[in-house]
Image (cartoon, rainbow, N blue to C red; front, side, top):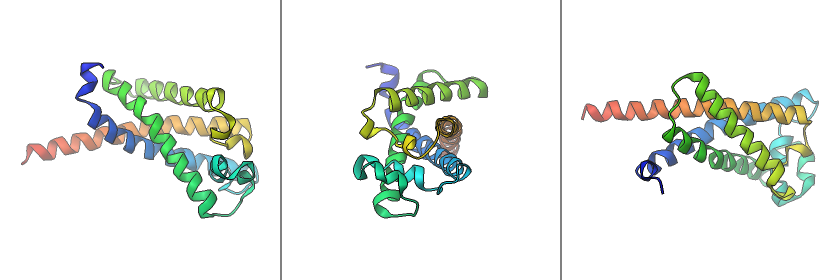
Length: 170
């Protein structure tokens, strides 16, 4: 294993949680907005994510339910944290020097996620958005995921800096 990353794993893990939570919330908001623009319930894309457990009919569920909405949103959040982990590892090895570089790196990670989610993952384990949304709306969700990854990484870095400055006062 890379010795540089060996000592960074605890920080990367915490950063992945923060970054993943931000990215999940931003992309979930985009999914809800896209669904409304398409004349559907704002919850349908998130409910659709529960299709791994509830089958494709989950995409037609319009109301909030524990079986669909909680499972779908929980799956969405865990997936975002999963993708945030390699993103944060990349940032630990290659700290971005500009906001543009951070956005570029976030776009690359989001693109990888999209290709894996819909190109390499068995249909049963895709995000399920294709069951509820158009391809344009799915693209918008991945663009929002890009912004969420970048924003989450900035928030995570700011939190680390605040902890460091507080530690200096002790």
